[in-house]
Length: 406
Image (cartoon, rainbow, N blue to C red; front, side, top):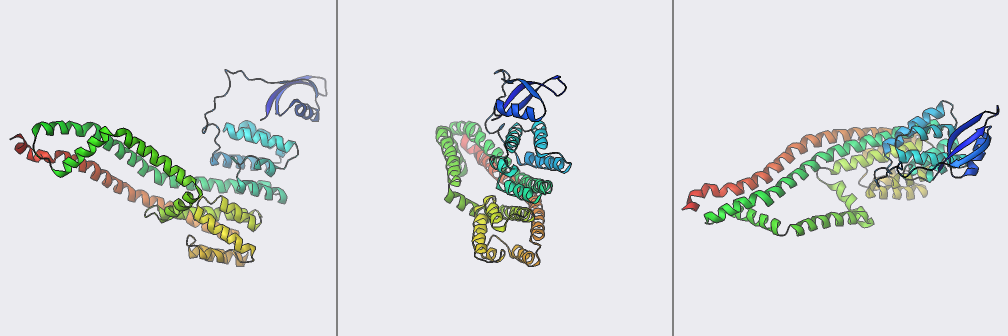
């Protein structure tokens, strides 16, 4: 990690100049100052007081969001296009980037470039911020002398990915919140409210209706064995996360998601939009097709789609076309395959892929809107059935209250 050094130098006019620089060691600072025309007098490491040390929260302060990378890419492209040097642009971005972790990474990239590394190689050392897609496109931009255009294309691609995620997340948030509310209400009723009725019915005596007896039994079990219930819930969550974290579990879960009755279509359209957008960006940037397919498979986000892309890569290596192998995989609809085939024949594959991505972006938006209007009344109905059913079960004996009193 780079260290901050305070320096005192003399400029060419003999004037004393003071300032700070970030570098790995004193020698690099001295070399940088001499290259700037200064004569170093004193260079000291700048130590930060423990009271002023930045507090880092794992998982929060060290996180680099896609949105931050998109903003960085657009600003970087603007600076390069304006004639600023690579090092000067990176230095400015290090200072003005709001995300502290991304600012630190940009600073390290600048130091690596200053030592003679290429920009793509320097970025490849930080996969947390710059994935294989990003590095491959930057590498092609460096080779073709169109780095600013590639960075703008990257910014557009990432921004569309962020918007796609936002839409999907908005579709998932509402049912998740309502489900948690229903769970909390049911828990409160079972633990606190139902026992009050149980005591009253015990005093009255008599035989209770079956739904009431079942509800009282569930409440009694929840109160007596609450630790087992909580343990089972935690165990289920941990076990599920461990299962989807394994290769076989992830493969099966991704296949299940595509077949879900309500959300399966949304998952599929999202995966296709991501596939088309990523492959279009790589193809347009001049990345070789085999490398592009490998990157698309790595960033697909779904094991079923990734498997289809890897099979396509193998077929292309053997001399096959890009579209034909995709026909063998159910996840790719005929429209996508046909449009890609036309794109290959006309030499406009990137344009066809962009149209496919735009089409599925619109489909995702329409699906999210439709799901929102469908899920809202459905969840309200579920909430009414669950909570209403519990209330009815509690009050059923009230209809026979006179008999119970006698």
